[in-house]
Every structure is written in C-alpha cells, then in structure tokens.
Length: 70
Length: 258
Image (cartoon, rainbow over all chains, first blue to last red; front, side, top):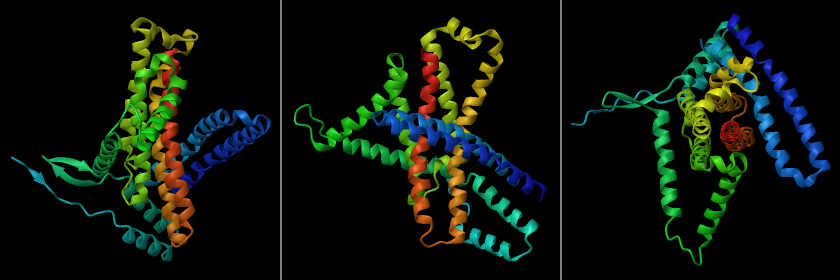
C-alpha cells in the first residue's frame, strides 16, 4: 500500500518533463517561424532536448516500477 | 554429442493476465489491484527462458535477436546482389543514398577523426530500430529486456572511452578527466557510470512504458482506440529512441575526439 503511494509520487516527475518538453517545443516552433530554412537543424536539437527532458520522467517511471515490483 | 534439452516454459499468456486484472477489479480495491499490477509487472520484467542449449539458458530476447539478425542478413544479401558500377539499378541507387544519408549524419557529428566508428553506429541504429518495431509482428521486443539495453549501453561507453583513448593517447586521456579544472575530476569519473546508466534506462523505460500503456489501453477499449497509439508507440517512438541512443553515443564520442 505504502509502495503504491510512493510509486504514485514518483510519477510526479512527469510534471517537470512535461513543462520542459513544452517549453522546448514552443521555442522550436518560434525558431522555425523565424527561420524556416534552419528547420532540419532545429528539429535535430529539439529531438535531443526532448530526449534529455524525457529522461527525468523515465527515471520516475523506473523508480515507480521498482517500488511496485520489489 | 548434442545435449539440447528443450524444456519450454509456459509461454507469455496475455488473456490469462488480462483476466487476472479484470477479476482483481471486481474484488476489494486496495491491496488486490496493487498485487495484481505488481504480479503483472514482475512477469513482464522476468526474462523468459525459451530453451536450454548445453545446459545454458537461452532467453527469449536472444531468440528474437537471432530473428532480427536473420532478417537483416537476408536483406543485406538480397539488396547487395548484382551491384554495378555502370547503369546502377533502382535498388542500388536507393541503397547508396540511404547509406550516404546515414554516413553523412554521423560524419557531421564525429568529424574526420571518428569516421572509422560510423559502421558500428549504423549497425546499432539498425538493430535497435528493428528491435523496437518487432512488437508489431507479435514478438517480444528485445529492448524490453533490461539485459539487452545494459549490454548496448556498456558497448557504447566502452566505445566512447576507447575512441577518446585512441585519439588522445594515454597521458592526455587521463589528463582529460581533470578538465576544465581539477576539482571537477570526481564528476567526470562519475559520468563514466551515469552515461551508460542513463542510456540503458532511457531505452528500457521508454519501451516498457509504452508496453504498459498499451496493455492498459487494451483493457479499456480493445477495438479501435489502440490503433493510433500503437502507431505512435511502436513505430514512431521506437525509431525515435533508436535515433536518440546513437545520437547521444556519437555526441559523447565527439567530446573525446576533439
């Protein structure tokens, strides 16, 4: 029971990842609107940034998983 | 003397698993559901042994990896037949442009110093891409097994450090841990552990997380709803993760190759 609550709290890491990816995407859209010719470079950097921001959510998921499984 | 002892353990039974969860819902809510979910997740995390070869367990991820290897090898043999210097066919042109695109992508990141590692990186992206897509064809994708992603991440960190060592030489390589100032040396050493850990957990967590969400969606509405999610998680997310894995590996390598 306590482990389930802990797992639920661990999922709160998703908030940070959501905000981070949202900000990154907003800035990328602005950048593409300003300079459409740099589209491919911006997309590459956006994907990298999203992957790194997403990693925190994944850590939360893994910790929640470990709490439930163990 | 062949000692192939085929002892098939009970295969992954999806309907039984779903029934357990549905029955769990009707019972008391608090302990039962957590227990069922825990049991389900434990079952997913367990590595299933398909058969034993010389007393050595062969895991399901290894068997699926063999299937991927067979697919890629057969594709390679079929695609590279009848290569010509003059009047190349459509297949050859497609193959050459695809290879060039991959080569140029990594060449832009690594530069002249790292071009001997491009073949390995393309191989890894092909393998992870195929492994993530395998879920569509009903196989259990190997990247859902933590052992596979740990192995891939270890190979990556060995390659990263080897390329830095090869490029800089022993003395400069050890010195590079104390850059930019000596006080950050512990953090640089810690990165040796953190980088492969984050690489393997990212891949594993993404694939397993997608799988768990898909299973939950199938319980809610098994008819049409999972289709767009399946396209997103199995195809798009899987390929993005393959791309991210090699992209990060090559970025880390670039630091050592400068």
